[in-house]
Every structure is written in structure tokens, then in C-alpha cells.
Image (cartoon, rainbow, N blue to C red; front, side, top):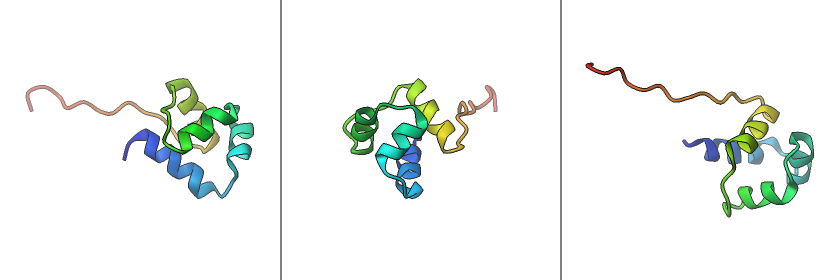
Length: 68
């Protein structure tokens, strides 16, 4: 599952209104609303704010080592 999908799922599973999530995370409501509806993607900064709000940790994917 992609980061954006994980964040959308976190919003849905929270049981909170988008307004409450926007207010608590410091994200502009209109940005969050359009993201939740699949109408826009989030910047890394905004995704990070949302992940922090839900206690999620953003990490870089591991790259396979060369040669094996």
C-alpha cells in the first residue's frame, strides 16, 4: 500500500471529522478534503504533518544491495 493510501486509511479509521483532523494536524481543511476525496496528492511536508498526527513514521524504502 502506498503512503497516500495509508494516510487516507488512517483518516477513515480515526472516526474523526476531516475538520477535526485538519485542525489537529495543522493542515488547511480544503487541502485535506481534496486529498481525502482523491482529488489531489499531498506534498511531503503535508504528508509528514498528517503522519505525525496519527503517530505514523515515514521512512525511506530500502534499496536492494548491488550484487545480490
